Length: 213
Image 1 (cartoon, rainbow, N blue to C red):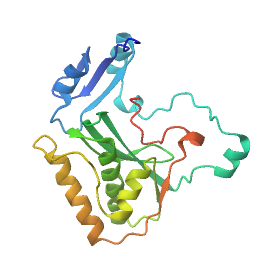
Image 2 (image 1 turned 60 degrees about the vertical axis):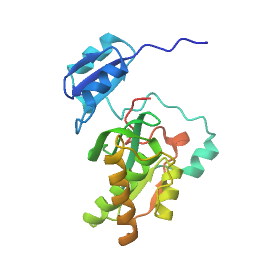
Image 3 (image 1 turned 135 degrees about the vertical axis):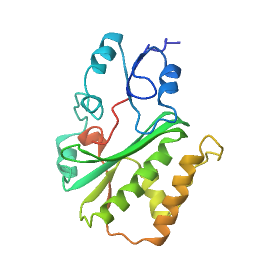
Image 4 (image 1 turned 30 degrees about the vertical axis):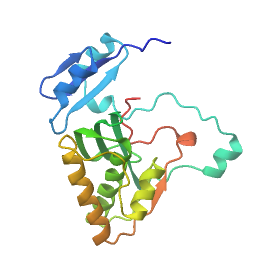
């Protein structure tokens, strides 16, 4: 059995800033801290260097990407529509600490972010990100489309429901409060936004990706 690689965790915003040697130590700093900023690194030197910099210089950065698709397949898919926003979620464990955000697809400027929440799943985060994005675009009377890399979340939005198997508990109550609000919003609002699947195999990670993989 392969040994799990050691990671170091940089916390820019949390109960305590710094570099932490374990996920549990990092989790203690971001739990119940609205707008926490954190990321893992393979070496302590990289983590400490990152701490001296800006959080937004380290998240959402695509690794060197080369598509494995043929030229014909890439031509058929085409390029992203940059008159758009992109949404994504991150979950450290499933369930685990979860957050989501939306960005401008071209500039990667962050438009909204929620979390981290103590317990959620990636699917729930993707669903909440989509509904938040729909509300955001409607509020701004925007004709932009919206990208997501989650077919599950797209399905839930179409059905106006959240089909998560995660059981409700005190730990995840804040997340399910948002889920209930999101479902109610879908049932009581009309929207014209087109939701489009992000073509990860052709374009790399979605711009809203938290870059923690």
